[in-house]
Length: 99
Image (cartoon, rainbow, N blue to C red; front, side):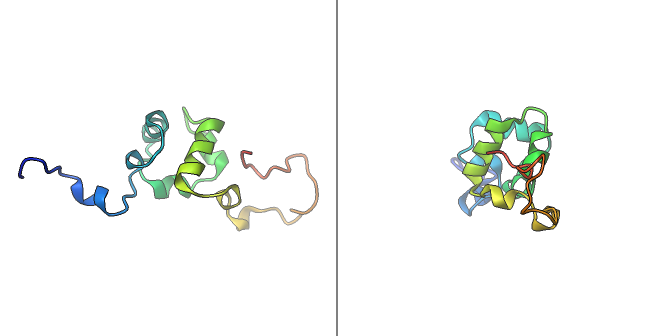
């Protein structure tokens, strides 16, 4: 290896999926990594409720993750999990999403 090269240089230059290479604050990246999540695709595939169950991840972290990775609240939960009576008010009408 020549000076100035790094071992992971290929991944960081081609639209990397690594969370540590995003605009997320280090403390959010570390909280996710402590829970075994190191890739953007892993975090995007989780619902807000799943993220909130992780140790060290709170509402502010979820908002930052969502903003940095560019997925809106509507995509945080698959349509197959939407209740059949989605149009009717319920006790928990927020659908598990953080506002």
